[in-house]
Length: 355
Image (tube, rainbow, N blue to C red):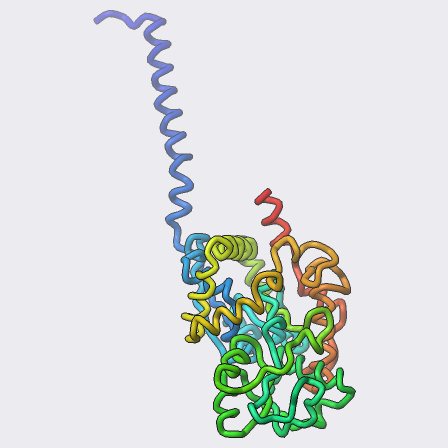
């Protein structure tokens, strides 16, 4: 056997080094595939049945699974019943309207990540066909008014009363969720009702009349911010979730911009309504009335998460005043309580990375 020359020995060393390097590179390349094959994070998401068409598109298009999330959804007639789940820790993530203020008033810790939809754009006062009520100014002429306690509807009702200079307690109010108002109108149990989309629009197709929308009696476009967020402890345990929720929303918005019918189809399917009603709703709460991610973190917009006493904070503060006046919460929310609950960092970080 011939001895190995230094030159051949050096070549063999190079070959061995190359093999090791190739193995190492292969392991690194395989890492993302391993991460993607991991089980998606399971958690519980509570929400009322409402006009959350961006969320519905995200569900229908499988965007949560794509982001490594596996939410189990629990749907409620209003936002108020999901508060017990948030308080006990059974619900991790939420989408809801002014049940958020109700929760903060009960000292339930929440973190608001961003807007689901500006529900005030589609919320309205509805009256029966033969009602003498022609607008919110005639509210005292209503015999019985359907209003769900601890919700956007109660805040809208309080704003109507405030605008008219009367006490909400001077009117006959029936605690009734918007999904249940249709039968109450039919039976004559109520002749007026306040509710969020799509329920006023459905009632209108049944012969009732929409006489006023929130922007007529509410400040700065109305007061019904529907938000998505989570329990602070859940976000602490899963710090990646907040930004993933923003990512899913951004992808859903992009899909809707390309094909608006996705929103119509998803809303109609999820709420079991006609496509005509779904289109009417989206005309109200979509388009210019749907905040963009950039608008949410820009000072001075009516949806701003970053203004200390304007934008979202101002809407929540007004809502706290109204819910206190109607006896739903023991005291109005302080500015400190409100600011502690709003966290714009998830949207801000997402936009920075997107750039």
